[in-house]
Length: 439
Ligand SMILES: [Zn+2]
Image (cartoon, protein in one colour):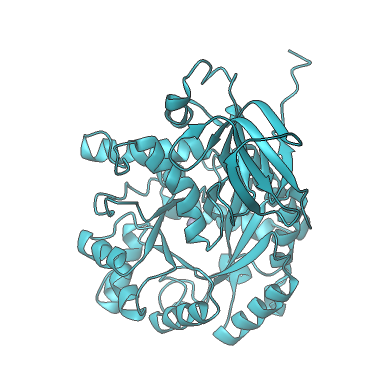
């Protein structure tokens, strides 16, 4: 799948620190950016009334959970929790067939593109149509759905062996089964041979401390390093997971993982909602990255992660839409900051070195995600994939904002309806517009 060679000139282009006029972005037929510089001469693809930004990277998604939207928000028996929600999610998993999964993935991936997301890390664990056959049929369904939508996919293929520490898989978990490491790596090899390298890549995943033993987590990460693949894992989203881990291993999951791993480069820990500050500091010092999912963490009542320990010069953070209860990266960004403000009773929590919160957050949503997924993306620079989104400068939420305030206005004042189009590897797609004929 190759793109179209083109030179793009928008009214304004994000060059890493500011929006600038008269910037030409040259893209080759292979879908990569070859040059970024002053616009000269003709034969440009002009984008009047648009600002061009690097596409946003969604570092953590379970696309099928789009099927729970509108469900699980009533509480007839009183208060719910993550664990009651998980029962509803397992119910959905048992009812899924290949067609339904494909429909849900296509819906989620389309919404992502409409929200300015050009790459997604799909943390995928529903592998089997028939759990007894270990068929891995549903891995291919996710790939097909991403191809249909044209979103860049990092298939974060998930190892899931136990249904809780030392427990067999429960009835709702049988479709997740990877019974041993050799079965897992055979499937990784099969997937690697089936990928379209201009759009698709792989990542290695241990679902959580509930689903894999520390020795397996260490082996998965070691082999991921050897294959130059990123490694992801859910870590300390819920206090119950920490209690169970302390009971089994004498320490919380982050502590156990740090003991099992040799460093944490190319490791992304998802959530870290309840991670102890000293464990977090050790993890970050070892090179680890955290993926926050503010809308899902809010929806599930997980709690608010303390990001105060993040290094000042550049956060090692990424963002994910996780349960896809809502898909809007602008909202994820501001809630990442608002959660910290509410927690600390202070403002400007995730500002960059010059004090700009919007720039700090946008770096998390673009380069932070790209680094978590080991993608050359998330910036408009030679050598990166030609993945972009455009903002409609006439959109009501941001109209008449001067260029130097535009990123702030988009992140704090707009939603994805201000996004006009996305481009993945040089191939454009306009945002879907709802018909107003009947209004
Ligand atoms: Zn998740």
